[in-house]
Structure formats: C-alpha cells, structure tokens
Length: 502
Image (tube, rainbow, N blue to C red; front, side, top):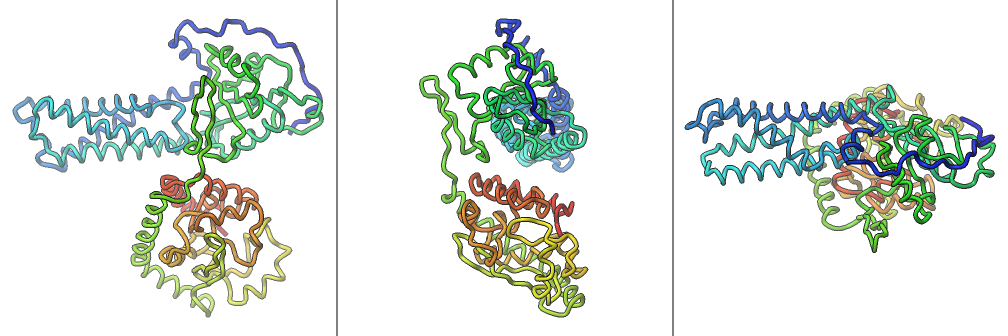
C-alpha cells in the first residue's frame, strides 16, 4: 500500500498528434496490448483441427460418408471434408466475431458466437447442397460432422480459456495494464472489482485523479496516484495499454469524447466503468437518443418461461439423480452408522423462498452431541457473519470430514429440489435461527435456495460473509438459465479441487 502524500501536478501537455490515424490498418498495427494475437492464432489452429477431427470421425464411423461424391475423384471428397469444411468453419467463426479479443477469455459471449457460427455453417452446407443438387449426401455423416465440430470447438476453447486463466493467475501475463481515471473513491471501487478475479486479466497500475486532490492526501492506495498529468503521457510512462474512466469522470460533457479522439491511433484502449456495480451485461442496454447514449437497466428476470424451464430442469435432474445415486446413498449411510451410531440424515430448519421455512436434508457429518458442544466453540469461529465455520471442527467425525470435503453430504438435498423447496442453483439456504435477514440480505429470499451457487464456485467457506452476500445478491439480480448451467459446470471443478470445503 502507498500513502498519497503528494502529487506531481503539471499542466496537461497537448497531444503530439491530431488524434486521427491515417487508416484503420495503421491503428490496428500500433495497438499496445498484443497478448491476443498469438492467442487468436492458437485458436485458429485449434478450431481448424477440431473441425478436421470431426470430419475424420464421421468418415470412420459412417460407411456412406462419401455418398454424393462417388462420381467424383476421391481426392475431391477429402479436400471438401478436411480442408474446405474446416476453412468454412473458420470463415463463419470470424464472421460471427468469435475471434474478437473483447469476447475472448471471459463471459459466455465467445461460446454463443461459436454456436451461432455452427448454425450458419449448417445453413451454408444445406444451401450449397441444394444449389449444386447434391441430394445424395449422407445426412447422418453431415450432421455428425457439424455437431461434432461445434462440440469439439467449444471444448477446445474451454481448454484454451482455462490455460489463459492459469497464465494470468500464476504469471500475471496476457492481461491489460490499466490506468484508472476519476475520483479516488470511484477508482478504488473499480480497482477492487477488477482485481477480485485475476482471471479477468485487468491489472490496474496507476490512478489519475480528476478531483479531490486535497482529500486524498495521506490515504493508502494499492497503486501510485497522480494528478494534473496528461493521461496519454502517463499511460506511456507507467507502461499501460488501457484507460478506464470511472464513474463521474465520464459525466463531464465533451471530456470523454475528446479523450477518445486523443487516443485514436495511440494503440491505447478506452473503457468506461459507470457506477453500475454488480449488474450483468444482459440487463444493461445502450439506447442512443439524439446522439446521447443512455444506459437502460432492466429489472431482474424472476418469472416467466425461463423460470418454468429452470423448475422443470430441477425436478427432472433431481428425480434422475436420486434414482442413480441410491447405491452411493446406501454406502454413505453404512459408513456414517459405523463412524458414529445415530441418525444417518441431519435435518435442520432453513429459510427458503420468500421467507418460508423448510427442513433441509443432509448426511450427518458431526457427532450426535454436536449442538451441545457448539457453545464451547463459539469463540473459535473462523468466519464472520451469520455462519459458524472451523477448518478443524472437533465435532466432525473422520467420515464426515471426507463427506464435507467432497460435498457428498449435500446430495440428499436433491429431495428438497424434487419437492420444490430448493433449486439446483441458487443462494445457499441459511439456518432459520441465525437472524431476521434484515436489509440487503432479505433480497436472497426472492429466489429459491440452491444446492450450489455463485458463492460456492467462488470460494465457499474461504469467503467473508459480506463477500458471500454480495455474490448471492449478484446472482439474484442477474439470474438466467445459461448462468445456472455455467455455475453447475464450475461446481464440478470446485468439488474435485475441494476448494474451501470444511
């Protein structure tokens, strides 16, 4: 942490150019951040290989794969299957901006664009087959090749993204060095948000104050603070490649536009961080009115067809899961009874949707006298807020410790999901006797509690209570069916890694 004791205040120097590059090609070559270029080349090779592999598998599996090409030289069939079709995939992926650096490495947009490209490829193949009157194509072969290519491309991009995130977390490479512009409170809020997850790849390196110089003196800051400097010169001095305009710094008429003009041709990116924290992109829409871009924030989607689909998915998955997990449940029950005689299940009142109380199902992981022993352990609580957590809780017997580490103790909650008291994904249900859920915490009750949630895939017990509440409220405000599927996918990795489970 650095103390803001003094500022190097200089009169802003005029830009060394008129802000107008000679051409868009010249501007692209001078971009400061270049990590995405080798990454895009890697994705191109990966996508081409995935499409070619899908064609190879289709040829090997289906005997009629070359149907429609039997009157042509064999080399023509192989050229279409292993060269032209993969190149077509790359063309449609590029056309759907699946290689745009703004969508790489974060969020679902990259995968959505791959799926759109897959639909476009299928439409293109159908049109070409119709136009050339090639009606004898093997539909099974074509369908397998297209669906297989899309699946392999999605899988390859997930692996590539995981490698990119690992590189960012461990080495600090392949990211963007940001200079935050605004008042100190606004810049520090943006700093906290973008550094919360190193996988995002945003690394603030300096703060440039637009107001409140005197009030900021003596305060501790995580990065150097400057004032009264030419922003572009400061970016070059600290080795930045991105300027983030925070909060009210973007509200002064004309200033943001002039800054954008100044940055043209410099290779420095410009982003705006409005004061809309914890609101996801699907709820925010830009609607220009007479040249004024207005940010419209939609209400959270807490009803409608998507919620019906979520309920149906919950009930079907819970029913199938209970049937398939019967042998595992029996084995766990035997292990619990051998470890500590007593009930196999632990049922505790929890607060659910709209404040209704229900009894949650869990495998018992503590000795039968755990509640009596809690009073003597309260002062050893290792977390804040409404929960009691200890990494080495003496009330947990050995088998129970394993069940907690692997989250197997949570599986009986499929019963609650089947009965409609819980969902597969949602805020974790809290004990009914732990408080009145006052203030912002009550907003968690707008949706059904879940077996897993954003809290669980972001750190579980390692998070503070305030951070856990923030994540739960973010989920409530930005819920979607696609987001649920993403959290379920992330849950698998978190459970296997046993992160934050105790």
